[in-house]
Amino acid sequence: MKGVVRLDHLFETEKQIRFDRDFLSGWELYDTWDEVEVGRTHKAPHDYLVKAEDLIYYNRAVGETDPILIDQQAAHARSPTGNVIAHPTFLVSMLFYCLGSQGAGTWLRTPGARNPFQDIELFEPIYVGERISLSFTTVDRFVRRGKHYITNQNDFTGSGNALKVRAYGTLILPSTREEVRRFVTA
Image (cartoon, rainbow, N blue to C red; front, side, top):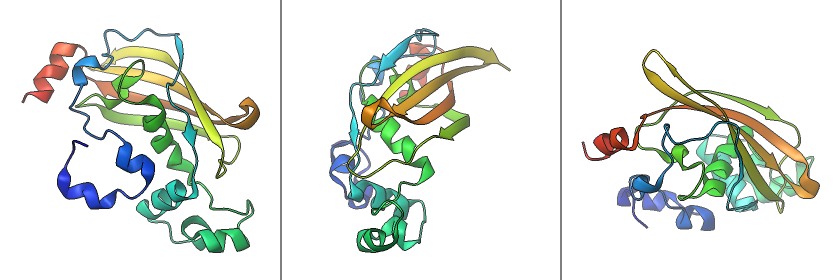
């Protein structure tokens, strides 16, 4: 897997090891600001099967110390769900995984992108063993103070198509493929 080799030891879970973390590779195929269609809904190409190892690793990485968040045995004994609990921002990992590196929504991986704001609504817990699907709609694309913004509504659903999380994410992006090229080749 391409990427920064000195970071390889940080990747422990099956999903992390397989994840394409080289965001510069394949950038030519990513959606760009000037191509994204507002109002169009897409189904992400990959579902996310939630494993305890995914939650434990993420929870440790964000600095959690509560045993029901980082220790599977403690979670089995004391967690209200009987298993490890997902951190509220775990959805970011699911988002990148579900989108993958090709097709609609790849503007999220654009080199040079900046994240000015998010709005996250949690409706139901995310459980170990659950298969999470993502559908997303670009709800806005605008220019403010010379910067190009895109906002997506990301809906994560679980068992029985129950809405688990709705997250609005906005990024500032280079406006054209040529601007992305300038960033990548700088």
